[in-house]
Length: 399
Image (cartoon, rainbow, N blue to C red; front, side, top):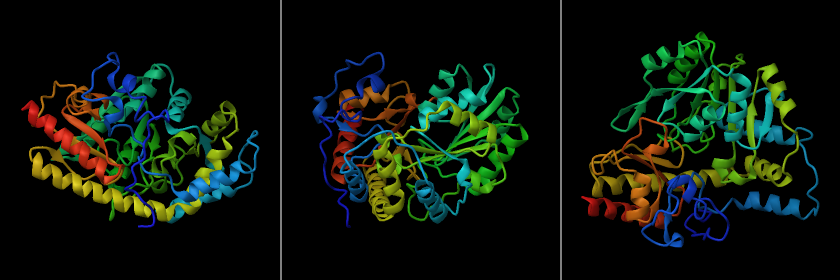
């Protein structure tokens, strides 16, 4: 490999949430919980960022921008960034969107809060699948909107959509927005063209706008293909596409995301409410990622594939009762360990206290997730091995 994904980088002393800012988020009302070891010795496998060094092509672009010595007010001008992102979606997914529909956000999560505010009246509802990324619920709660959940079905760890339940809930006239997660977080499913078409048709038949969170789309296992929902319905203005380089290239704190909003009034509302100033380092970093990061991403996904293979073999050998399928995308593994630990256990706290491993238990994924844990595999293999040994030992000691 050209890039070194085995390198261990110490994230302590950098204000990283992964290593230092985890207590309030993971432990809530009990932030002083006593972990199995000192904080600097914890194995962090929770928050969805990577322990890998950023691609040097991106770092060099940021350094060159710093060499210009001025970080004044910056906004997108010309079409160089838009063309870089458009080239990316066309080459990777054959997705050709209208450049005039592209706007930018400081992130997909803050965009969700604002989009729900613009799209929903106070008495309306938001539909999601469960288990779910927790911030889908937070975005609904933050706008005082009722959340409607349609539970996914697990077929030995392979998750499927319950279309009968989904359609029944979509027929509630108060449901006006569906938040689609594709690839799905936390299960890692990449929804098929047939599944996407059926979901969208149900939504359109019931006058529901779809916010498509596609932030994990670039992190595919080998042999998998991804289709943006909007590519299937190029004439529809009822889909808001959300993509970003943040997960793909480990650029979360550059706070730069792409929204494709074909609905003219909604896009105008967005532009009226959002000041068009961007961080100059974010702009050059993300543009460099789309223009020069393809080789790094290809090697990254090879490395992630190997980590997933290692996890799969480790679980089969050491914890054969777990229910697990290798994720079709993302760097997140969704593992049902309910055969070993009771569903009533707070798994986040259990593994922090008994294994010295930080992870997210099922209680953090809205619903339909009891007995499951989410593991971040975007780390050097040595760290993954260490974390799994500690998790395995804690389970055995409990039994």
